Each structure stands twice: as structure tokens, then as C-alpha cells.
Amino acid sequence: MKKSDIGLIGLAVMGQNFARNIANKGNKISVFNRTTETTNQFIKDHGNENLVGTKTIKEFVNTLEKPRKIIVLVKAGEAVDLVIKSLLPLLEKNDIIIDCGNSNFEDTIRREKELSTKKIHFVGCGISGGEEGALNGPSLMPGGNKEAYKQIEPIFKKAAAKDFNNKPTIAHVGENGSGHFVKMVHNGIEYGVMQLIAEAYEILRSLYKLKPNQIADIFEKYNKGPLKSYLFEIATEVLNKKEGRKFVIDLILDKAGQKGTGTWTATESLNRAVATPTITQAVFARIISGEKETRTKLSKIYKTKNFKSFIPLKKLIPVLEEALYTSMLSCYAQGFDLIQKSEWKINLSEMSRIWEGGCIIRADLLNTLHKAYKGNTSKHLFEIPELAKKLKKTSLSLREICAYTTLNGVPTPALTSSLNYFESMTSEKVSANMIQGLRDYFGAHTYERVDKKGSFHTQW
Image 1 (tube, helix red, strand yellow):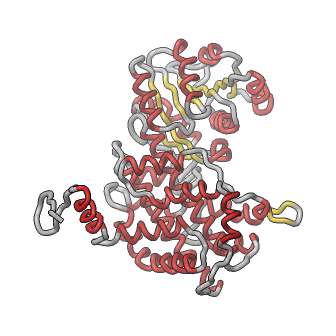
Image 2 (cartoon, rainbow, N blue to C red):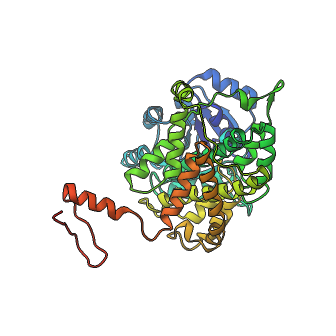
Image 3 (tube, rainbow, N blue to C red):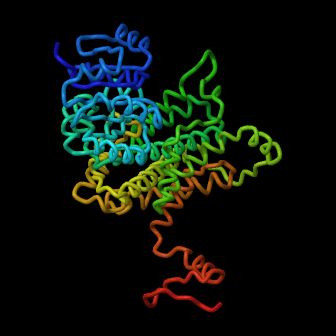
């Protein structure tokens, strides 16, 4: 019997769907799950000539063509290490383990280093698109040994989604942990964009008392213009969904969960001294949302809100659209800056391209970034001429919205952080000289001068 082209361990929903995707695209795949019942049920429900169920890890490995290519799709952390440990006695030189989970890139660097001493290749592959993407075509961000990537490329290209030019949304990101690093930043941008959409919803809900379906109509119009994206597309569906006579969105408790990748992005940006305020504030917003009991108590103490101004809804809708456009570009700029300043020389044009299809943050503006970064990945997003021309106009709308929500007591941390990032990054002079003066006064930390080079200290 012909051996399988590739194998997959971990049959939760993502694993099942990705295995089905690979099989449906014509590659034979063996699957294994630590609970045999799950494997049996999966084969019963979806089995075909390209799907091979196995009962033991040894049987699984023996069904694979050499060099063996093994996808691991289990919970990030210790579970990945345990799977690797169980595989090692059964593997041979040049076999390849591909971690497609949401692993921390530092774990991927460690695993790749450890396995390379055993002549086993390790690829850390970011995968975005959720359950639907895993089945129908995700965006794939593999990082690791280039030769190992070439071995899995034909299979993964078939499984990937398509970009705006109908090319597979996959590219070799770089060495060791680069793939999972880029996926982490992708998720950080995702946090930021979702928070921006939520704040737009809140403005329309709280200040204009619009019903969910009315907000959905506005978002649907936004999704036909510069904001066209997957997240706005599904936001419309979320707002229109009903349970009986009630809108589901009105029944959802305002406490947002998180799995950690947004926090990783925020933490990494602080460690690397790269500003990502929109992403970081999006994480803080989720943390604050979890303080439901405290928020409820405090809302009764500070319940009086002084409404200082009012913009008619007809005027607000296009202004809010431009504000969202500016803030989303600001969020992307922060994420891209973090990627640019990493230890890997990552091609931002290719990253923009492979995010055009399959992934959660896919949006039309990524095609602009794909073209803009071709041949030059060192420029800041705000330097791109095509975007700079637009931002000079749309940033004024973001200023107006942030002033409006502040005066009216509507919390918009991501919108205001996006604005402050834009204003600061486009200012030749900021207030840091005052900080340096204070630091030198109390701690003799020294400072640089504008009129001559060197470090200086003043006897204050």
C-alpha cells in the first residue's frame, strides 16, 4: 500500500479540518490522536482514500513516506514538547516536524535548536483562518530550515488559500521561530482591528441608540469601500443574528476572552522597544472588560455623563469611516514596525501578500501594502506615498472622532492610541527633552544636545 505523503497529530477541530483540506487537495495523509475514539469517529465521518487513521504513534510513523513530514496541531506549550518526545525514538535523520499551533516563537527557536542536533528538521508554521480557513484554505507562515520548507512546500501550497492574484497564500518567512513570530504579530494586529470595530459599534450604540441591524447596515456600507475586510464582513453577520426576537449581540456579556497571542505581541514590543500602542491598548481593553463587577459598581458612582457636543448621524458615518481607516493603518504600521525590527530579514511585501487570503485580518488594504513594500521593506508604513496622501486627509477625521468620544465619555482606547501614535510618529519634535531634563536632575542620567554631539550632565 502506498505510504502517506504527510501525517498530522491532533484531531481537535483545526486538526480535523486541516487534514481534510490536505486530503481533499489530493495528498494522502495519516492522522493520529491520543484518544483512538476521536480518530475512529473522524475517519467514519470524513474518511476517503486519502485519509488514513492510525491507532498508535508507531503505526502512524510507519505509514509515512520518508523523509517523514509530520504536522503537530495540539495546544501550545507542554503538549507540543510531549508529542515531540513521543516521536523522537521513531524518527530518522532529515525527518520533519511541523508545528502548526499557536506556539510562542521562543519555544520554536528552542525546539528547532534541540532537534537540529538530532538531525531532525523543525518548522514552526503560523496558520490563520480559523476553522473555516483550515478546511478551505488558510494563510500559512512557515519558518525554519529552507531545505525542510522545500520538502513541505508542494503539499502546503495546495492547501493554502489564494491571494488577489490567485497565488497560494504561503511563503517561507525565515529561519527558526520567524513563522511563529509573524503569526504572533498577525494576531496582535487582529486584536487591534477587532477593538477598533468594537469601538465604532459602541459609538453608534451608546451615542445614537442604534439597533444592531442598523449598525450592521452602516458596517455593510463600510465593507464596500476602503475598509473592505473579512472582519467587517463577519461583523455585519454578528450584528444581524437573532435568537427569537432578540439580537444575539445584545445577549452577549461584555467580557472579552483572550488566548495570549495579543499579550505576547504587546510584551515583545516592550522588550524590543518598539511602540505598538493600539495593539497594547486592545489587550488592556479586554482585561478591563473582565472587571465587570467593578465596572458595574463604579458606573453607579460616576453615572452622570456630560454630553458636550453632538454630530448628526448622517455627518458622523463618513467621518467615522475615515477615522477607522486611519486607525487601522496605524495598527498595521505598528505591527509591521515590530516585524521590521526583528532579528530576521522578513519580506513585508510577501507577508502582506499571504495575508490577502485565508487569514482573519485579510483586507483590501493589504494589496496596497504588498505592492508598496516590493523591493523596499525598510520604509515605515506612513512613508508610503499613496497612503501618506490619504492619511493627510483621513487623520483629521480620526482627530474629530477622538475629540468627540472624549467629550462625550465614550471609551475608545484603540482609536485614541492609533491617533496618538500617528501624531507622535509624524512630529519632528516631541516632549522627551523635558523627560531627559528631569532624569538628569534626579539621577544624573545625562542627555544628548541639539547643538553638539556627546553625553552631557548639568549641575542643576
